[in-house]
Length: 532
Image 1 (cartoon, rainbow, N blue to C red):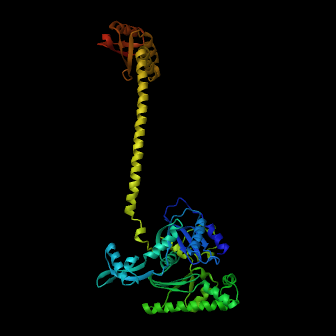
Image 2: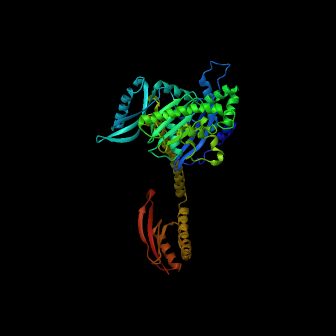
């Protein structure tokens, strides 16, 4: 992989807004030479690109011809994950296995469970392996009225479950959990529809030109109608340059990248002859499709893949096919920090399928070939979560209740001690407490009553206690209530109040006799005083 691309890919490792809501998805594409990873967030304002990574799969070590190829893929995956600089667990993957079948079916409208079962039985007639060895999924691509009844048009995908398990094992070896398994055709479409304006009635050809193979996918009304793989790729061109120019593979690879299809290049004849083979195969595929579906033309041709970056390849294809070949740019339509990398042209051809695996918005084609045993039942997951969470919540609740009870008992004990101390103090210092209450009543009254209260405090005899002083401001009256040890003390107190010359009238006291502890009599009294 060119160092410049590695540098640019590593630059996009910072999320724009960590507080922005939206689920994150990670798409991973393992090619014949490169591992590509794209991290996106489906935010309210659009699909945001958060990070990308690209790593080269090490070539076969000639000194170790029996080395497991999976070890080299694992190294590349680990290298790419390090570039992301985040902890990755769940990934959306892409499978391109020999058993993958894509079929278009039309079935009557029915409930989803019945439809899923009907799809399986219909596919049994269309696949070359037993149905019980297959995993299927489908998309409803449209509806059609036939004989007054509504029928569903379906895009159905089937693959051998064993191949899918082997695919999953690639990721479990790298401590990754496969969240979904899609196919290259749909992932390429997802990237295309996100980054382009397109018409439903158009027939669109998406061509992915990789290192070893070229895949042709034709869509009509956004439904897959034709797929084909050609054994042609960037290595085909490199091998032709090596053969014609008698140079080494690194020299041929460098020449291919540097000169491409430039007219004055000495490598032009070698490269052009191989690209003409590709044009011939694409033209044959287009011809077959037109004849099969009775259409006159292909409306659009968009090219992706690492080899699509070959200099002037788009012009060469356009001239040879009589149809404009558009270089695809999967970064169009995505939100990202422009300063994170300076030239998307260096990366656009590599990340279409990885981005397509992650994208979850727009006219997206999301199928999931994850075998049943690897799928997570939402209800079962919720039940398991509740079984774990509820006991923990109960324990936390019991601890909280116990702590609250202990704290309340502690507070009550402290209050009880304080209360007992107050009672004991009141019993031993009764006279002091009565006078203190009297002084407190002075504090809460208006300033013009201070002389009256001072006079009352000076004439109150020993053995007489005031419990309260009620003030009726409108009537200018005071009502003194309290207790005394005898009637004589109360009468004496009333006379002294009259002698103060502060009151216009002191009514004779009202007396009530009660007996307290040890049969000691107490006289409770009420004296009404009119203020001058």
